[in-house]
Length: 157
Image 1: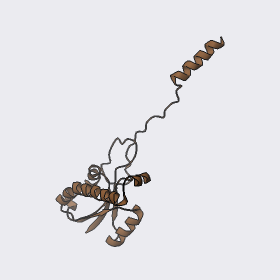
Image 2: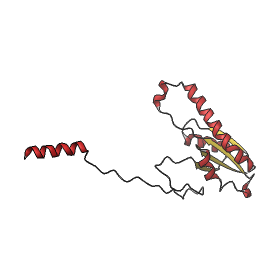
Image 3: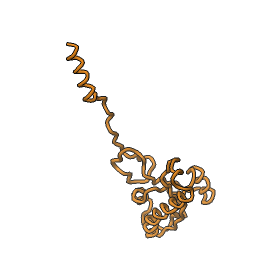
């Protein structure tokens, strides 16, 4: 049985990335290891929320994410394991590969870029999304500064 480790932070985006991999031909032959990557919290949040409350929030967030993905993957007939990432991903990956052996890794996390035009249609790492960047802002003189300059020019005449 082929094992695939999948990093996930958004169910809708992950489903788009995983659809080409979860075809009926591969149903039941892939063991999915879903790794929930919770959004980062600032270090200043510790003023307002305790460590246990943050861990509870992460667990609830991961449960919601898994609840959205598991029925879809189970419909394909595939076994699923779930893991919540609590530390750096390279260390977790080494631990998971030691536990499950050498397996494929798919990063199905939503990219944190400006604006994505075409979401990826396949899980190939070579297919980079097309990114539209905003044009650089040109320096413009504020109206008050321009009027002040005009006033000085008129006063000098």
